[in-house]
Length: 257
Image (cartoon, rainbow, N blue to C red; front, side):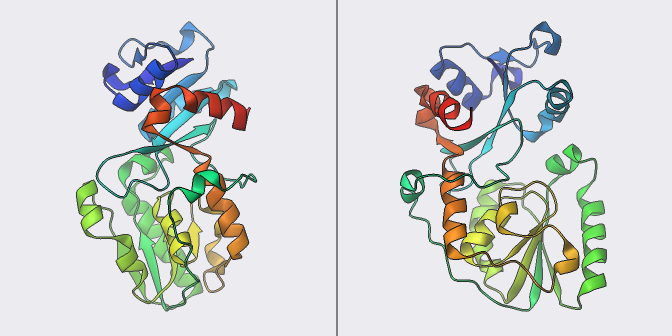
């Protein structure tokens, strides 16, 4: 496996690599054509490599921030996805990993407003758009199918600001549905009891809809389905301790091979 570390300084990739007994490879010296080995990379801006892997049917693992468990400023949990950016289907899993997070699945809420959670530039670059273009297109589409008020929530670039301005506060303000691109906000929204529309591959996709023509009739999955979805996501993310001791690799091979 090739653990691709940005300038050799990505601490999470480096920890994962060394936990597997492998030295990480710096992006400065990496040559895609040197081998056909599986690539492990972190961050959506590695989009050229991922798209080339898809084209060549080359296996890769994508790492990014975990779905839950990172309520503070420190990233303890990291999702790892095989050959994709998100876990977009539900696989039946035990509940042992999910139970450790003490997450609550709230009853469904019903309100009037459409809350749009803006994406940042990174995922937009991956999908060849811009936040401004995505927002304009999304608002125009929504207005074709509803006259509900639209509230736009811009994503702060600083994680500490996002913590100080919690998503739950926005979701509790008379919201009918959350509309977003590939943001983790959709996952939190499903937990909080606000239905979601996800307009790019998103871990909340199986618990929401993707078609804005249905904006007036969101999807409210059963509590059993939401619980199964949550248990699956818990099996798709790993604590930094699991990266460092090599157990993350062992579990990935066991669960996803």
